[in-house]
Length: 196
Image 1: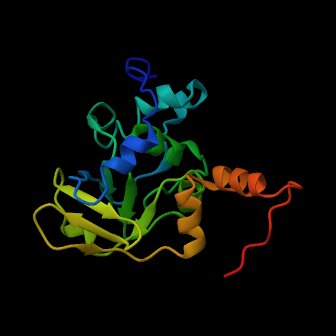
Image 2 (image 1 turned 90 degrees about the horizontal axis):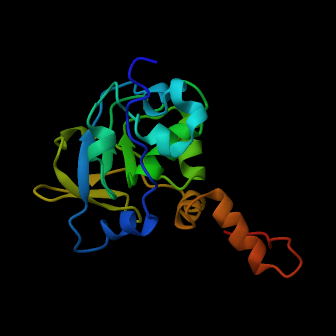
């Protein structure tokens, strides 16, 4: 297992802590810079997949940034290179980032399955070709509605805006919470069709 058993489990972060870091006037989160081609095995190593998210979280990105799982805090942001999330379709790769409190992943491109898994699990993923100018360790606040990162010491970094239906999913904390809310709105258990 080569060191996979010696990392402590990491409990889930309360989503309210993530949101609080990015309220207007808040300091935002630390930026974690990652290279191109970070794959799902780096995010959720296959050797610990049977152990649950608390254990997987202790190994998240260990082969890319050994300190990540220990030092990441609620509201931190990942700014990655091209093709973030390539590899398998394991949803734990996105779930573990949410579990650790990552507020969003910003990259020039994403693997399609990772992108959709992230949205479905309530983890914002934004495309930006300008985020590469942000420094590792810098602090920035995410304005998801405006699709913009606001670094503490520099000009804003624009991201491609997410369509309304994806923002709606994120606003509920993921696809399943959104569907539960819709079902709760309907007396017969059939959600009304959404217009617009």
